[in-house]
Each structure stands twice: as structure tokens, then as C-alpha cells.
Image (cartoon, rainbow, N blue to C red; front, side, top):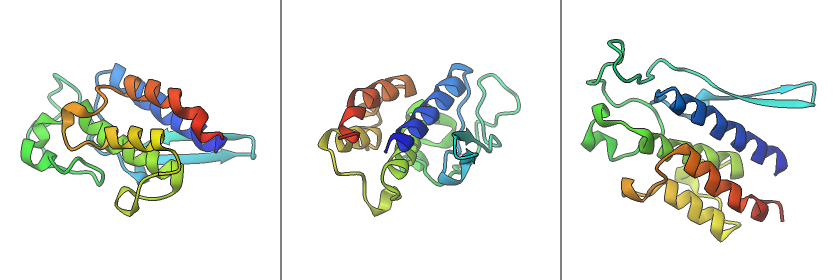
Length: 152
């Protein structure tokens, strides 16, 4: 479990950095989060495929793009990809966190060995976008407060 927690920490750090650069990935998926093991001593998580990245004020970012990505918020088809924002990334990131924790994709169940962790995941997956974490920093801080439950 310690290794999984380190990976989740790296995932949060990567997306905090991406968002601090005022970019949105828009294609968070299990296949775009790569894990490399080096000599059984180091494990590094890398985020790949920035082909759909949204950069504010960039002429290269189409606001009329169609919805793409395998872990997108289902409500995104209603609000439109032009309205994609950080809380949509939170929805997808929560699914990746769940997968790292228990090896299950969201449709196959969520981590349920701790009620606090389950509540954390449900907040990230909330149907009401206003009920989700407002940033990855907030999400990481909330996760940090409950990590001890995963080490028991």
C-alpha cells in the first residue's frame, strides 16, 4: 500500500503542476498515466498524451472540440467540452486514484475498505460538480488527511 500511496502523491503533484501552468489535460485515462520501475528502487509516475491539452488564450486550443477521453464526467456531454474545467479533471483523477488503490475501474466498484476513503472517492465522483473538490491541491490535502487509514 505504501507504494500505491507514493504513486497517488506523484499523480497529485503532476496535476497540481499542470494546473499551476493554467493547463487542463482533458484526456486523463488509465492509459495516459504511465508507471516506470527502475532497478526495483524507484517507481516514477508519468502523465502522457497532451494532445487535447487546453491552454487559456491559445489559438491552438479549440473551444469547440468534441468530448474525448475515456474517464470524462458523463455530464460533460450536456455542458459541452468548451466548458471543460478543473472539476471535470477531478472526476477523471478520482477514477485513476481508485484504480491505483484497488485495481478496479470505477464501473467495477470503488475502494471500500475504509469509509473515509470511500467518502473521498464519492466526493471526487459527485454528480453535482459543485460538490466535488475545487482543485487538485484541495483533493491532495483531503487525501493526505486520510492516508493513515490506508496503512492500518
